[in-house]
Length: 180
Length: 101
Image 1 (spheres, rainbow over the protein chains, first blue to last red):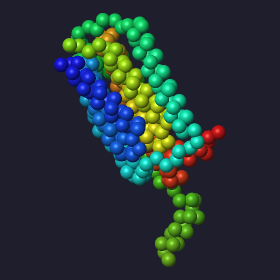
Image 2 (cartoon, each protein chain N blue to C red; image 1 turned 30 degrees about the vertical axis):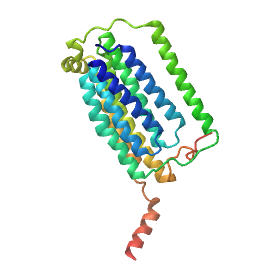
Image 3 (cartoon, one colour; image 1 turned 60 degrees about the horizontal axis):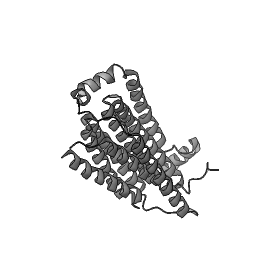
Image 4 (cartoon, helix red, strand yellow; image 1 turned 60 degrees about the vertical axis):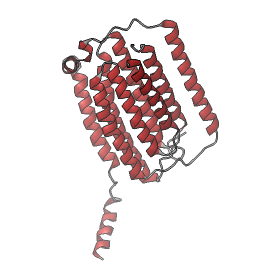
């Protein structure tokens, strides 16, 4: 049963990630990314990390992908435009590099092997132990991540804000225009 | 029947390769961003798989932090795209070449 679920969602994840990369329209690519992330969340649950699966669905598909869709629709980016010289060579190089990397990983796994897989322990799955670690041993990184999120919110707001009009002259000109 | 952990690792490697190839070949800024998210997820899957294999929680905790950093990265990156789009009316990375050698 576990094998069946794994095979189903692994195939779905691979297929939808191919669609993410290959589809010309960013909106379809983003929707396909939702499917990939959901499949990875299911695999997290299979691997004994249900909390991370929930977080994955909440944060990625609930927040990040919605942000992506929002920006795509705001900018109205359509299909890709330019095809510079050497595009075919670039694609061939990237595909070749990816294939070589995958073969090397497969070879390393095949030659070295991995230790025996134990059955899932309650301690690994339990949210209580995870959160205890998070608030004792990993408290400093936790706080730093909170600070990082704050900085990112402020930075994103500042960067995406509409730039002010060029100096006071422009604003007075606007004011005059409004009066006229 | 239990799933061998190799399969998770191979799946993660395949997803990472797909994402890397996409990030290297696409021209649209948003598409490259999507590919990077894909690569981040593949790395997360590897971390959780090793966490399961070695029966320690460290991998899961790292994935927790990666999720938070990915959220921050997406927010800032998309804000940058909006700012660039205001200036140049495109996010085609072949045309954003002011700082390119």
